[in-house]
Image (cartoon, rainbow, N blue to C red; front, side, top):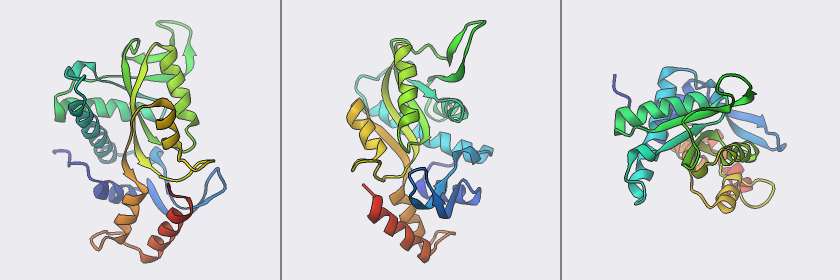
Length: 228
């Protein structure tokens, strides 16, 4: 079976069907009452993981095509943070090869440092001296992402960019979102496969299986309050 092309509409619908994405009322760490919640830990079917990896792969292939300095596909290195990012990066490496002919190197970190064998806390591709793309599900406060960046920099790597599955597009502690702060601080691109505006468009679409005028109003209100 061929993997379908990634579209925000299809991903949102599949995420809702698998309860990866839920609408309702959810208390966030910030204390905000969010009208939706995205749990990437429930991307636990082959169909969900395949579609997500296809989205990551399409975005990475486009970046390589647009980057005049990346004319050698072997130079692409992708990295997933333990533990959630491990299946994401592995599946994306396969999708890059199968759908784009790009033979990407991939790796991930352990949360614990291995003291025997090869040792260390990195597994897979040697990232030393390389520019690495990081794959993640969602960036909320940016704390976890900064930890990943510190791990990569300690190993001699630099960050080429970051791709997340979902951008909530809402303010952090200040007026900027966590993603905007990362872009400003790191001076690297951060791309999202789906963002909150896509969720609003989905809820307003007559062809959406989960069209809901009440939920749409709640999402629009939340976007007005906290959006960037």
